[in-house]
Length: 248
Ligand SMILES: NC(=O)c1ccc[n+]([C@@H]2O[C@H](COP(=O)([O-])OP(=O)(O)OC[C@H]3O[C@@H](n4cnc5c(N)ncnc54)[C@H](OP(=O)(O)O)[C@@H]3O)[C@@H](O)[C@H]2O)c1
View 1: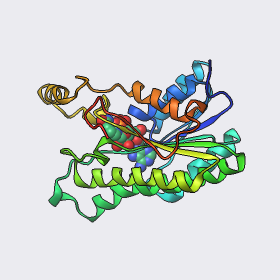
View 2 (view 1 turned 120 degrees about the vertical axis):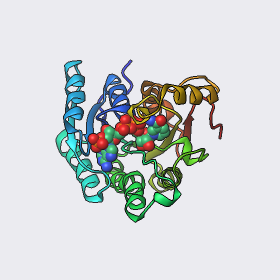
View 3 (view 1 turned 180 degrees about the vertical axis):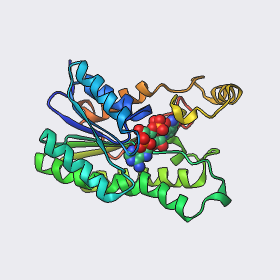
View 4 (view 1 turned 90 degrees about the vertical axis):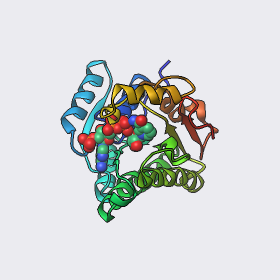
C-alpha cells in the first residue's frame, strides 16, 4: 500500500546520506519529492532522476537553507511546480569538528543558520501553505547529540538541542492542521563518518547497544511513519533512533 500518494514532500539536503534515503523512502510510498542541496546539485538531480526512472515524481532545487531567503524560495518553488506542500523534512546539516576554542563567530553563526534558522523559516513558509491545505507534516532531523552531548562539538549539540525545542514550539503553534516531530539519529552510516578509521568505527560500534551504525534507510522508514497518517496523533515528539545509545 502506498501511504503517501498524492502528497508533495520537500527534503532539504537530499543529495546524499540521510536526506537522500528519506527522499527515496517517501517516493516509494508515492509522494512527489523535491530534493535539494546547496552545492552538490548534480547528485541531487541524479537522485531525482533515479526516482523518476522508478516511476515516481521528483525534481531537484538548489538552495542554501542557511540563507532564510533561499529556504523560503525552496518552499515557494516546490509549491509552484508541484501545486502543494504536504511534507517538509528539515534534514540539511553538516558536522564541524571544532573544539571549544576553535569555534569563532563565523563557525557559530553558520552552524545555527543551517540547523536552526533555515528550518524555522522553511517551516513557516511550508506551514502557511499546509494550513491553507488543512493538513501537513514537518519532520526535523535533530541528533541524539542534541539530548546527550557525548563528544560532539559544542556548537553542533547546541544547534541540535535548539532543533528539538523548535519542534515542540512549532507543534504547539501549527496545531491542529500540522504535525511537527523530530527524529534524533545516532551514528548513521553516511559520508559524514568517512574520516574515521576502521579502529575508531569498531570502538564506536562496541559502545552502541545494538552493536552497529544505523543505515540511512532506517531513518527513512522512521520519516515515512512520521509523515504518514499512521502517526496522526503524534506531534511535538522526538523519535530517538540511536540503537540504544541515548534512551530519553
Ligand atoms: N550521520 C550521522 O551520524 C548523523 C547523526 C545524527 C544526526 N545527523 C543529521 O542528519 C542530517 C544529515 O546528515 P548526513 O550524515 O546525511 O550528512 P551528509 O551525508 O553530509 O549529507 C548532508 C546533506 O545536506 C546538504 N547540505 C548541507 N548544507 C546544506 C545547506 N546549507 N543547504 C542545503 N543543503 C545542505 C548536503 O549537500 P551540499 O553539502 O552539497 O549542499 C547533503 O545533501 C544532518 O542534519 C545531520 O546533523 C547525522
